[in-house]
Image (tube, rainbow, N blue to C red; front, top):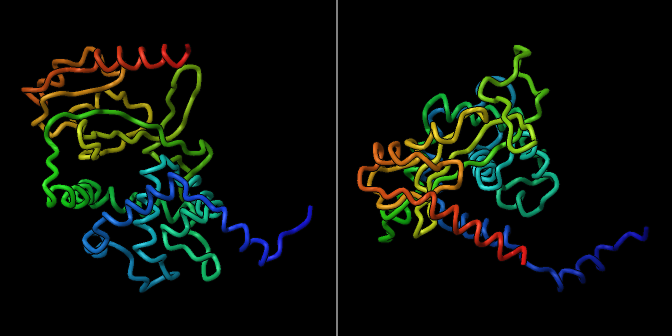
Amino acid sequence: MQQLTLARQAEFQRFAKKTQREQFLEEMDAVMLWAELLGLVAPYYSKGETGRKPVGLEIMLRVYFLQQSFALSDPAAEEALYESAVLRRFAGVDLGSAPAPDETTILNLRHLLEEHQLCGQMLDTVNHYPESRGIRVATGTTVDATIIRAPSSTKNEKEDRDPAMHQTRKGNQRYFGMKAHIGMDSKEGIVHSACSAAASVSDIHMLPEWLHGDEKEVWGDAGYQGQTEAIHAAAGEAQDMTSKRVKIRAGVDEEQKR
């Protein structure tokens, strides 16, 4: 295969197109309160006084948000950084100066955030931006969960599997990893709550964790039907809209088949 010269590659840039992922990352970069997030995590992050020099905290936080945005496991996040210039640019990874963070380094940051219970504080910091601009998250919540896969062979230093990871089944497919559980404002599309659990934990058990209590409506897929009492216990004035959402989704699917 004929290789492209640098001049030819530059010429092809005339036809480059900005992808939806690239646009999304540019928007996220613009609205994220990076200084506040760095200040929140920095007191707990290694200063490199012993051992090898740690990867810069801002790079690691950006990689963490890439994981959450695209449901990437630790190994998948490492590979994605090598494969995608767009992701490297967002994270601030320069392969000409240093390698991308490896999966163990990425795992260690997640455990650090969990150990010091920083995930919820980080989410509150992120949500401060829309609230400071008059966007109020209170009308309704859409709940959902996504599986973050991990290699079943991955083990820690004690030769044990990560205790946060477990096996689950979705349809006829088996997965090993964890789930990210998300609560999103149904009107503004802003995530106001997020938590993680082993993939084997049922979505309905995590339902109260996603509701802020002031909802008027709660929307969910078929996995959340029959949870009206749990919804009312967490948000007394909320109307259970899961059945309606399932009917709407079924109608859309039927229309697509036609």
